[in-house]
Amino acid sequence: MVEDAIVDGTAEGTAPCCAPPGDVDSDTMATDLQVLTAMGNDTRYELLRRIANADDGVCVCDLEAAVGVSQSAVSQALSRLYTAQLVTRRKEGSWRYYETTETTSALLETLDDLRGTYE
Amino acid sequence: MVEDAIVDGTAEGTAPCCAPPGDVDSDTMATDLQVLTAMGNDTRYELLRRIANADDGVCVCDLEAAVGVSQSAVSQALSRLYTAQLVTRRKEGSWRYYETTETTSALLETLDDLRGTYE
DNA sequence: AGCTTATACAAGCAAATACTAATATGTTTT
DNA sequence: AAAACATATTAGTATTTGCTTGTATAAGCT
Image 1 (cartoon, each protein chain N blue to C red):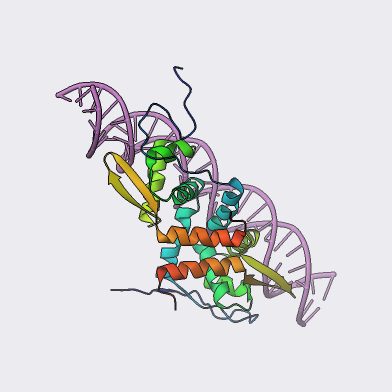
Image 2: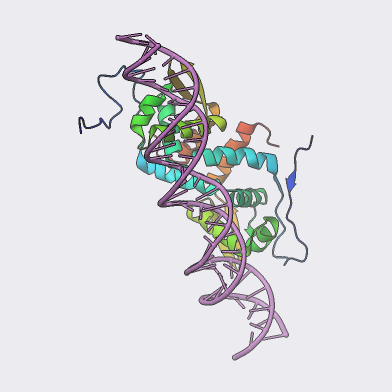
């Protein structure tokens, strides 16, 4: 009740140890976070890698066998990847084929470069 | 030493709708996921952006004022970013200065390119 | 039409997460 | 040495997450 806190980084009266950093655009943040949180999960990451490896379209049935979770979990995971625009999907008969998008390739490639152990 | 474990979930007797995708290296997966999950959080993402923007080292005190969480939360967030090797830190007097690593720059740059709206 | 296969959707729940508050540690100043 | 400051650590907790089971939809078979 003595003072209203200064919400900004530029507090006065105290010794300035460095200049306050610039603000972050919230649209950018939202977009990036959707991608990062979509990729940042064991199941979804593995699905992405597997789809990216065999880039000619992979159907859910085979993915299901590969990762260790239920059919429902795979479906939910793929759905989320789709929403985040990390995969595209096309229907063919009763099967759904998933392919990775440019976003996925670019990010996985960057990660590979950073590890330096990509082959 | 046991390394290069492979996550293999290939089952037999599955419907032949397509060829099963290749396996995913589990070390690669662990490394990438540590990075992705570290970045994939509002607070930590914003901290990274802010540190990256002012790349001459930012001290905790200013970051604290910028993001809307407690001092403790900022400290915990930075600690996690450090563990994931997304930032380095140096001590100077009683202040800690954080800087982003190559990993962070590369990933943020990729994200910027993908959005196409980088300014 | 019924049966099976392929995928999606909806609840419910256990586990992980990200905070806050309180306390500890180290550093500078008085 | 004590007080004030900068950051880290611990413990407790509310929220979020990612699964499971069960059910729904839709397409191919018999």
